[in-house]
Length: 122
Image (cartoon, rainbow, N blue to C red):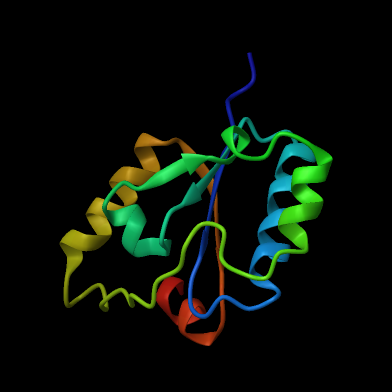
C-alpha cells in the first residue's frame, strides 16, 4: 500500500487578483498528482498555529468551483500578516508548527503571497 501524500497551502498578505488563482492552481495540480489530502490554512500560518485548517475537497467539488475560485479576486482561505520570529528567538513556535504538520502527515507546504510571505517561511 502506497504512503498517503498530503499537502497544505496558505495565503498571506494582501488579497490580490492572483491569490485565489494560485490557490486554484495548487489544488488542481495536487489532485492531478495524486495527493490524498489538500489542506488549506485558514488565515495563513497564524491560523495554522491555532490549528485552523480545512480539507479543501469539502469546499471544491467540481471543475466549475475551480474556475470560479480562479476568477474571484480575494483570499478564499483568509490571510494574515503574521511574521514568524527567527528560530533562535522562539524555538517553541517552530516545534508547534512542525508538530501540526506531522500530525497532518504533510509532505508539501505551499505559501502564497508576496515578499513578506516569502520571508515568513524561508
